[in-house]
Every structure is written in C-alpha cells, then in structure tokens.
Length: 393
Ligand SMILES: NC(=O)c1ccc[n+]([C@@H]2O[C@H](COP(=O)([O-])OP(=O)(O)OC[C@H]3O[C@@H](n4cnc5c(N)ncnc54)[C@H](O)[C@@H]3O)[C@@H](O)[C@H]2O)c1
Ligand SMILES: [Zn+2]
Ligand SMILES: [Zn+2]
Image (cartoon, rainbow, N blue to C red; front, side, top):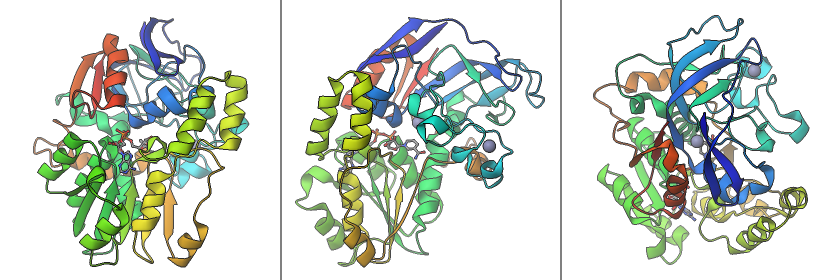
C-alpha cells in the first residue's frame, strides 16, 4: 500500500510499504478514505525528529471502512464506517473507566514514561504505524473507533478524530465563568475550532490571537474579536486594554511548541536537527526543546485567579517557568492530550446538515495522498492559505 513516511527533518515521502495485517485478536484493519494533517504532525516534521525512525508512517486523524476484524472485536464488522480517535485505548482499565483515555493503562508507553499509545506519533508514543496511508491496523479496535452513519461526506465526521474533541476539551478545561471572557492563542485548526466551540457554548466574549492574516480573517468572519500579534507592541497590554485593565477570565493556549517568538529554543532545536538521533533525543529531553513564548503570553494575559487551558503540545524540561507569577496570580493550569471519546456524545448531535460548527467547509485543501510532501510544506510554511489539509488515499 501507499503511506506517508518520515525520512528526516522536513522530509516526508509517499512510499510503498507492506499492507498491515491483523496481529492480535483485538486488532482491526480499516481502509482509509480520508486522513488529515495536523499541527501535531508539524512537531514530528520539525522539532521531535530525534524521536522518529526512518520510514515511520505518519498520521493520526483518519477515517474509513472496516475491512477485517480480529476475533475479539465483536462490536465491529467489515463495511462499518468508522473514525479513529488519535489515541489507542482499551476502554476498560482504571484510566479508561475515568474517561482519561490518553492515560490508558493497557497501551501506556511505559519504557518512555509516556501515556497511551498514539497513532503515527514517534517512539515517545509507541511508534504505532499511522493513518496517512491506504490501510491502517487499529489496535484495541473494540474501543478505538467511533462509528458514524453512512450518507454525509467524510468531512462531516473526520474531525471527531482530533480537532473537535480537542477543541471541546480545551474550552471545558478553560472553565470560563458565566458571561466571562476567553482569549484563544493561535488560530490553527485547534484554536479556530476552540473559538467556534466557545461561541456555541455561549461564552460571553471570545478574543483570538494569531499572526497569519487569513487565519485571523477566518475567525473574524465568524464573529470572533481578533488581535494580530504583529500589530501590537506588547500583547499582554493590548489584551488588558480590551478587558478593562484586568485581563480575561481564561486563556486557551492552542499554539504549543512551534510558537513564533522563542528564538533561543529554536536554535537548540536546529542544533539537534544535525545530531545523530541517539545523541539528539536525550539532548532534547534534558537540555529542553521548550519554546514557551505562547505559554508565557498566557500567564501574562490571564487575569488574577483565572484559568489557563493548555491544549498546544509542549516538550522538554529545561526552560524556566515563572512560578512566582503563576503562584502570585493564583492561576489554575489545566492541560493534556484530549480524551477524544470523552466528548464525542456531546459533539455528535452538532454534526448535522445545519452544521453549526462549520465542519463541512473547515478544510482549506483536499489533496491526493500522493501530494502529502507538498501538503506538509504548505501547511508548515502557512502558504497558499493552508489551514487544514485532508488527504485522500
Ligand atoms: N492536546 C491535544 O490533544 C492536541 C491535539 C491536537 C493538536 N494539539 C496541539 O495544538 C497545537 C495547535 O495545533 P493546530 O493543528 O491548530 O496547529 P497550527 O500549527 O496550525 O496552529 C498554531 C497557530 O499558532 C499561531 N502562533 C504561533 N505563535 C504564536 C504566538 N506566539 N501567539 C499566538 N499565536 C501563535 C500560528 O500562526 C498558527 O496559526 C499544536 O501544538 C498541536 O500539537 C494538541
Ligand atoms: Zn491531530
Ligand atoms: Zn484503557
């Protein structure tokens, strides 16, 4: 089959690789019909390279049709239409019972000290073959699937794999009080959808920050107040001016470690890009891959006693955190990978022809799988208006 594979920093290719097979009785094989590129893939493309292996198959936002099931997967059959959540979870352990699916104790990647295995997401998360491919082996398939109805186009449902539940969790975790104000940092797919979810939930006021003109414009058209990072002197002052001098009740950081404005760490990453993986991986864990510009903004912006919801992904452990400010401002900090299936029942009723969240028109690019290298490039460089790319195997 054809699959999108990692070959080095900013080097993804479409290779022909062996078709996946059922390996365990809890596996299923799914024929992929649509599969997205995500901001998280950009970390692998650029920053987390040392944790990747040459030829690893990328992708964690796939959907398709069940082709074959292992004998213990009794709730799926060939022909079923399914979306896969980006995390692999069993549905019946201590963590899954608490709906903390990204901490699943059956699939935790213990040798790396990490949580549940993820599709297409480096050695840190189990080096499981990803979903940017013609076929996908789904481990723990009895739980790692979301059944969706036949009929509507793929794009009605595909964002259940990541974008929708992730955006949903980010807003729930932001815990905006009744009538309160939320600032969303970053208007990639996650931040953009977080604004839509916040509006849907009736958050009093939504302000979003980015620096890419078409991303700002897209949010503005949906009634979000937007701030262009490049047009303000000090972001914190600009936001305080807009919020009576106090700052917003809550901030969602939907940027993560690819943040614009973290020059020192960028250098460290570039250095590691030239080291052999065996040296670079420990270097990046210990010396830090941290690029905390967006998080530092969030800490500055949020009002005293407010909440920061970190949904952008961070790594590393070396950069200093302003603990005195966090403590003195009495900030609540909530974070983590999204527990996808925790939110699906809340979201599914919104995936109708009325399309209140605008999923049908959310993608800016629909390209054949063969064009994945080009798609990664325009998404990373934010060229050609690329905000969300759906690949069609
Ligand atoms: N926690 C989870 O479960 C989960 C799931 C999916 C994605 N993510 C993470 O969410 C983040 C966003 O993903 P995405 O798909 O929207 O990616 P993206 O890279 O398209 O979006 C990031 C946006 O942030 C903007 N930005 C950069 N620096 C900024 C700054 N200093 N201030 C404000 N905006 C800034 C960029 O211009 C870009 O539009 C990534 O870190 C991704 O890994 C987390
Ligand atoms: Zn994703
Ligand atoms: Zn589990």
